[in-house]
Length: 295
Length: 340
Image (cartoon, rainbow over all chains, first blue to last red; front, top):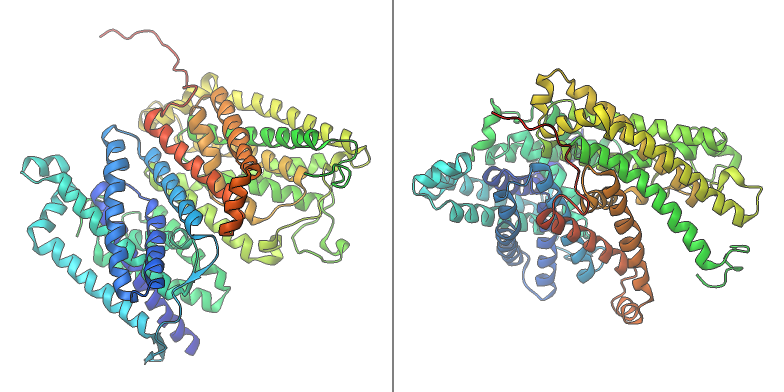
């Protein structure tokens, strides 16, 4: 029983990080309708930017913010420079996926060339731990859980309560119509890519904090659990992705605790495949068209 | 490569041996690229898990060739261990590749969007690698299986004859593979498959069973992959999860895209360019002293390999951007003009 509770604790912590990444992925997918596999490598980039800054004496949380902004900019440039032009020419969906897979591999190995293939670490974080209902969480895990919650709430308010949010949802659901209503769809889409890139970079740094030791495959490893969470919660729905992240995180950690730790990822893989085959529109979505909705 | 005698090359010079290696790689890569082209280029199934069929063929070959684990003092763990002759093991590889191909294809039964399908297959690839790495009793986990007799069918011959004979076996397999492939990519079946790729609803509307056709293609493509894996492992003598990481599919995919999706000859050219000229060419960067110095300075022993992946990924993107039809585009059959 104690083992189960502890596993759930780990699951909540990793679920928060997964949710952070999943929401970013979801926003991007909802806006552009592109399954962007490069997202994984961008997370890795975020983690290494964080490492670069922390090695130079920047505190972890400031490094997280800077990495987020930087990855956000890269993500906008990636969309503007590569994906959007390809979409405009009518390149087919599977070709775009292959482009994003290739770009991810290129970015990942560029990182290897510069930073080396060996495992890295941000070093020891503050040793303080919190005990809650039998679960043990480190201070940085608690911070990440809080940070994720605040970001999710903020994103939800942005999407539902502001003009920008309405413009984003309009652009996501019907670009041409949105344009003819006077929405600067290109700019709105840039903002969405920026937002999702920031979440992606932040998730990278958060991953590096929680996994303690990481290497260039960090993003590639965690991308699938994040896609699983995003699909589970219904693509494009921040709350859904949050719940999805928790489900994937807890299921993975419980499986790891009771079977082989190497099967942690296999659970997420399994969830994703089953969801794609059985309910590709997510647990909560009633119709396939929910993909079009941003919130 | 150093002194040939010290490397156990027998009468064979180092360059001659390298030529043999290249030819075997080319042959096995051709089989694999043809299989992937049948699935991806001709039928439109972006199988990002294709490497698993190759792995299945290789593992099947290994456990059919090796004796029981106990016979080698339980040095490595694996299921099976039948100690059967080369042709049987090769056939087992083909069957295993085919079965795994169909299993991967089942994710496409449900009409997922093409990009979702690609992701589902990528996930199958990752999942298979994770399970095989973690489950040591199954196929010796991460360490992989070794101690296969190289060039198994001819172990009593002179090494030089063995190696060239193996090249011959690979060549024969390629010829057979190509004929089987052409049965699928040309004629009525080929036209039907291309119809499924270009408009699956129209194909279904004229009574084609799209799901069945896709599964058939997965079986055929998987069989080619399995054959490729079995032949490869029979040559190199060992197999481990590191040999079939998901990115390996990308190398084959690059060959298909650069050569020309849906064009068997184009894909052959692409395979030669990618697998031999680029991936092998990158190895020669090791001979550039400046690069060696850089590797030593920054402690990056695998720098050339990393550069290889960067080149491949960039090439794929450049081709999809500038020349999506590839070097040798698919030839569109001309039908009579429809006048309206």
